[in-house]
Length: 585
Image (cartoon, rainbow, N blue to C red; front, side, top):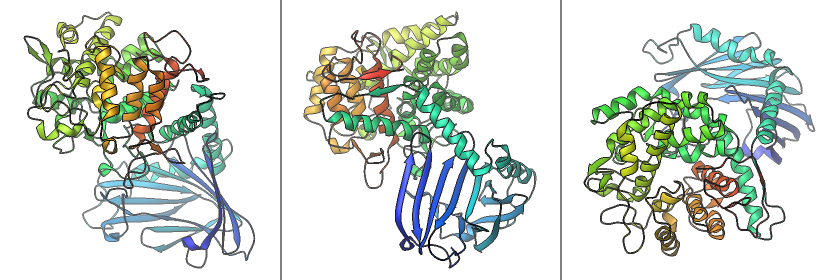
């Protein structure tokens, strides 16, 4: 607005609606007596945001428009924006035909923001702020982001920005984008977003609990629908997602590869394998550093990091360096893609990742007289044992996961007609069998056996992982009961609940599986917007959403050896209509 911008108190009569079917957000509100409608959409294939602001009536016809504000980066938890260091970064604005170009420099990072906006007046009211004012009653803008491509950003002084190929490239990536759409400009982005989301919902699996007497069915269906939307937005990019996706800063913006399975395994299970493929392909970009890590430690193959950024470099950590349960994930995910498309092309596409992963896993297992062990030092998925990492060995879940994933790697080689490395077979068949302690499976194979905080990960040895023969079903049933009866639930995390549901389902306990999915305790809350709430500092936790979808896929689509009936993981008292699900291993 012309009188120095808009404060929160100026906005009234707010009505905001997100159209899940078409991926379009529409906001209606009043500012100083003037009524507005704002339509926002994100292009499904490009880093491009479209905004349409229309004045729909009321009040004096005061000029209006949009303002873009650019902060410096921050490592603060929850907020990656630092507005108090304007001298630490630069923003340069250049008018171009059909809009303007913003060149941004933050330390060694350089990127461009191209804005396609016609019939507007450009203004820079303050450093790092760009305002464009509509000449009429509507303003439309396509705002596209792209990394700069012309080398070092500055000559050593703050504010010195060098022009080059990035300017032309950025201009063509977004300022020209409005001319590329069949509808044109911001309406074209809205059109493309709507088309993509229509296909998303039509092509994927579907489930309904209509007619189910259990009142919790409505809540489960709500979580399922919203989780599909949230994970598609936040968890299907060209790099693995952070736990909070694109919404807020967590763990300094890094992503954690042990969570990749929880974020993405559901995509092929729900009939959307392409959304997993583009994330899994990122592993190929860090293959060389992963090989270097393994070689430096005396192992074969590739050792995948725990907490990293797109470069694949390990974040310094007293936990991450010793964590191992992220290692089998690429094998599991590749197997799901093969089940979605069981062709030689799929095998050839992902065989290098399977092979490098299996090479490390086979060389990491430690041979002893009674079988192959997972030796100390390590940290299991239940990170409560980090202080004991120098002595921790043989975590129950990881033992089963190791045996199963190596068995899958053997099968992949056989499918391709290749010679199977003998060590793969030997380790897959010879992993040490977890031993019960006091009648239940412990979390790890040595004292203190089980600390009753954090993830009850031992149950995943027959839940996330199918039956490997290493785990006794009766003992696992007792273990699941033991966890339910006496666990520190406030210390759990959002994916623990679908993990327990998967175990209950595979044990033939469908009522317990639903109970796990909908427990009203710990961190199993899903907000009105669908996000899996953990704490005030972590109001969104996408592994909980992805885990929910994977567990529902298991219950609805079944698994190898499941009872021969529709939706074998749900109670027979439930009315379940399900279509398009992929069977799990």
